[in-house]
Image (cartoon, rainbow, N blue to C red; front, side):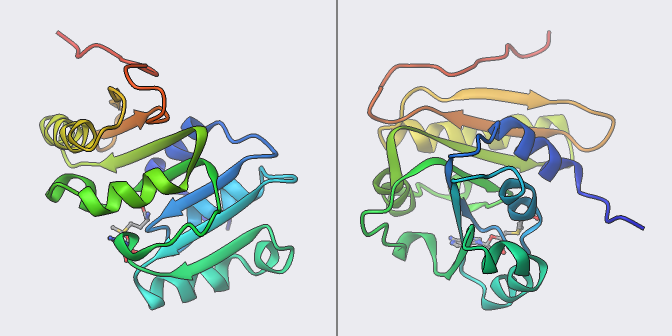
Length: 188
Ligand SMILES: C[S@@+](CC[C@H](N)C(=O)[O-])C[C@H]1O[C@@H](n2cnc3c(N)ncnc32)[C@H](O)[C@@H]1O
């Protein structure tokens, strides 16, 4: 039976609108479910997945053997705050359910993201939460951290399906301050 892709992953990958030439960075991407979907949409593009857990990286490796051997996917075991872009630039940087962006100021982590973003690149943060109230709380905290660290006014998008509420925060290139990608008003 084909594997069921979790709703949050399917939604996140759809929201990324991956183009064949995109250079993509996923933070905390183990065990590599989103990576499989992203890589299958890439042509000349490339993806780097980082995760601080060696176990999560190993699970990603097992799941994505084909994309690793084609060179489309690369993996790195590293904490985001210690990640070195070393000249690599990404059009889309994303994370799903990585809490560091709302549990504290995330200043070092967001500095590393900023270094990795190509001009015009975008950061997408997705969270699955057990309730709509929690989604709102998480999205507000993430948006505050982003603003405090010099990112452009984040666009917030909430997805209220039959399952758990999902909040995502989409942020434009920090080089274009003040530009809002998308803002969906709160329901009354
Ligand atoms: C809750 S899991 C989510 C995994 C996957 N994104 C998903 O939605 O199924 C969080 C993942 O992010 C990784 N992670 C959390 N904080 C991180 C950080 N600061 N730097 C790198 N990886 C991190 C964890 O090791 C873990 O694999």
